[in-house]
Length: 403
Image 1 (tube, rainbow, N blue to C red):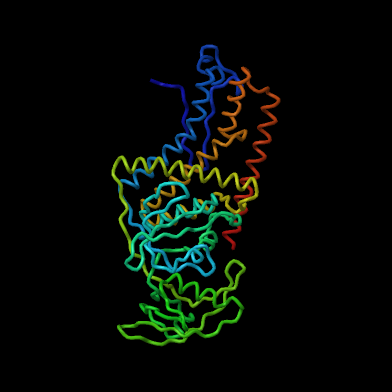
Image 2: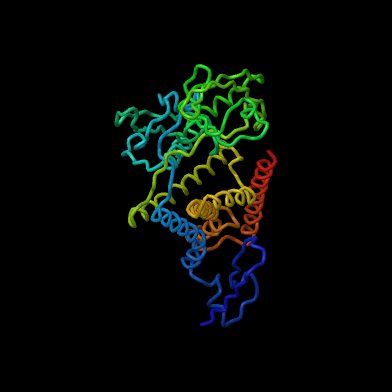
């Protein structure tokens, strides 16, 4: 049965739109008038408009559920030595703690499946400025606890700087020397691929993240003194003098040795059953949606930076990176984008679906739609706000690309 709907497949995937049969958009034949959008009951018009954003959220649930059912290899929730002066260090973490559960104040503890799962709860706690109790095992002792204090922390945006403030940048990894760049400081110092670093000057090395921080911080004053490293090589302890070089990273002077530091962390398979995986998919979609709304609200109030807005360049970059990491990571990225699009389109901003739903709410309360004059004014306002957001996102993209 032909519906009369026309479909177009575009050569360049630059987006799409739906143009309704509507008397406000042009002439409608008398026999087609019952099918015109503007002639439909209010509840049907609202359902049609809400269907698009809801489809985005449903797609996210399906993608998250598929990942939960298939299972993914993720880093084990063993934390590295926290950054000096960070929230984690002040809470008493020293590195090597195996995180079992987390709990917000007054709520039941939640099991932590992996380090990525732990990062998610850290993000929620930090952006929501809620203290988080972390229950972990360390040194053969079970059920120890520490509280990460996020209340009153200064505004942050969700990037690497946030996790440096928290103190947990990466899971525990061996402090092993990997690939080295020719003529780099590591090569000239006599380091060899596979060396396990156990001490720098008088500091015992717990993990690769700690070593990276020591190298990075060595150029804080602009002048780097030689460092005496103790490494294990072929079963023997070897002393090596390393001279990091000063480089600039995002306007900050940091030390570099021209070598990859660290080895793959311990991994764990995270997989859920049908009902549990589906329930977690619904829950995670709702949590991501709420986190997105919270971030947007904080941007509007000035509690979060406009740098959180990203455009097509950054999205394409992360799409490529996630695709290179495997099907599961790409599916998770697509789910995140789908949630973001669904939430964005539900915002009560004219020209977006949420703006049309706002019109229908007015109509349901007053019994009549907004006047054509007000609709035109609101459309112009909404378009201006949307163009401003797109401009900021594109500027951020270009800044990241050049910076």
